[in-house]
Image (cartoon, rainbow, N blue to C red; front, side, top):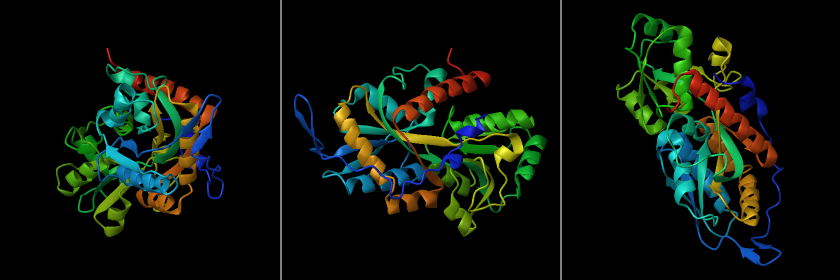
Amino acid sequence: MSDPTRGINSRRRNLMGAAAALLPLRVAGQASDVAYPERNINLYCAFAPGGPTDIAMRALGEAVSRTLPRRIIIENRPGAGGALAAQQLAQVAKPDGYTLAQVPLGVFRLPHMTKTTFDPLNDLTWILNVAGYEFGVMVRTDSPWKTWQDFIAFARANPNKLTYASPGIGTSLHLTMDDIAGREKVRWTQVPFKGTAESITALRGGHVDAVAGTPAWELVDAGTVRMLNTWGPSRNRRSPGLITLHELYGIVSNSPWGIAGPKGMDPRIVRILHDTFRKALSDSNFLQTLDRIGMEVFYMAGEEYAKWRRETAAFEKAAVERLGLQYK
């Protein structure tokens, strides 16, 4: 489903010691100076509390808050497969730099699947890309499926009996599982949740058979959850024995996410935010948090980021149409 060249692991950026110098918080302009920030900044997290995205966002907020004279306040705005935060940002927030949002890849897919009132390419001020998710399929350790081949064999013999949790219809995880089902000629049932934390709870409670999501490595290490595969371009260093979708099907399904503000922000404020967030990408606590939850820094900005957004929007449109999920 995904172009392997888009895998974040193959484009790892070593930002330690390479962050840009932070601009003064009072930036001189031709007409006037801009003092920023003068109060706390609200940053929407696109997924529910307790999941890997929420953990990463709070670590990022703490890293940025150590540099700014005001704090980053994380607000969870889950919904619409991770696109609700960006939608609310575009529709309601003032372009004053005090309301930002984490924007996952799925925001480029949303307009092709449902009626929307905003255009992610033109109705947001994009600041920088921060990191990317790693995905995989996990089951309970007491399940009968020891390998991905076991899982597929059961699905083939029991159409629609297997259930898997995902963050929702139209997400990268749903589309990839749908793609796999088509390739393997199997049928399984998606059970949507607001985030990975809820999905894992459902898995551990026996309410679903599997989770398609960010690997819960701490539960894997504790012997509670078993990973059946990972979805990056190469094998995961924490579990090199796990097969990848790239090896199985030529699929890479990772999901970069970035930070954006409303359309029409002052470029001077955008520059302050960019430089401050980029500096935070080398924060040791933030990097340790990403490593613990299976994410990786994936920095992009400027024209590189703009080019990636255009290409991603076109790619996601084609994927939605190929699977017959387009809005009509």
